[in-house]
Image (cartoon, rainbow, N blue to C red; front, top):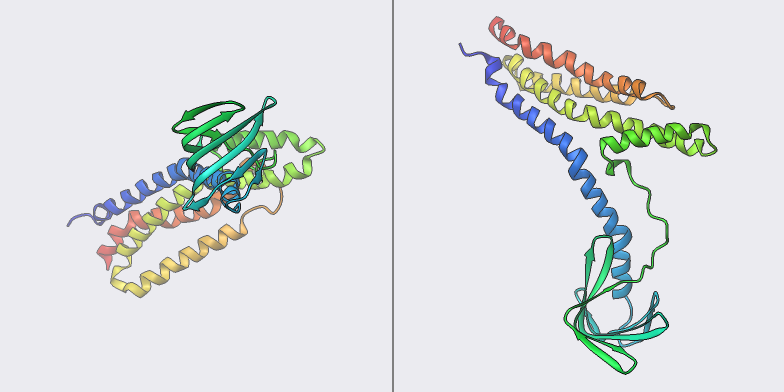
Length: 273
């Protein structure tokens, strides 16, 4: 007699590791991925595609530049000429080829084998980086709640709560509901991951003699009950953060009440059967 609880301890511990990874991913990798996606969608691609889409062999206006190039091959511009003004002086940049590069918060055009002509003077550079003119509006897209850390979410909660007594209270009210639900999800989602692994392993042991169909029916019933609770418990309006956390915890508490007793009694259930 080896303890059945000891046999299923390894997959349960793996569920705990996955739960910890879920928390890390939500608060680090997810933030980086969303920030990078926003940067690509709202900044890099509009500028890159707008320059690449200009017709070749014509002098085109691009921001405060006059640009002409002979051809475009996979994001590389060939035979490019750029005319611009700075401090009342006109400059002309000419290069064999040019590629796009992102550095920090700026988009650059990297000129290869470039020549800079200023009136009667010229200089050669290889390579030469030029900051692309901004073609985007001053405003930036609103930061998604998914791109915030837990500390930033709590900070935003305090800021929006302070705005409830200002003329902007309507916007703050709606935003505060979303922020508080996100805070609750950040804390509870990793715990839910672990509880499902605990329940699944315990159910497999406890109901093994009744067959796979019985295990499937019990598991499906618990999952449906969990998602019904997720749908029903959230408040329809604005509630305090503590109330939001308490309501959001109800499905998780339900899983605890199912998973932990099943785990601690699976040995006894197995012996009786």
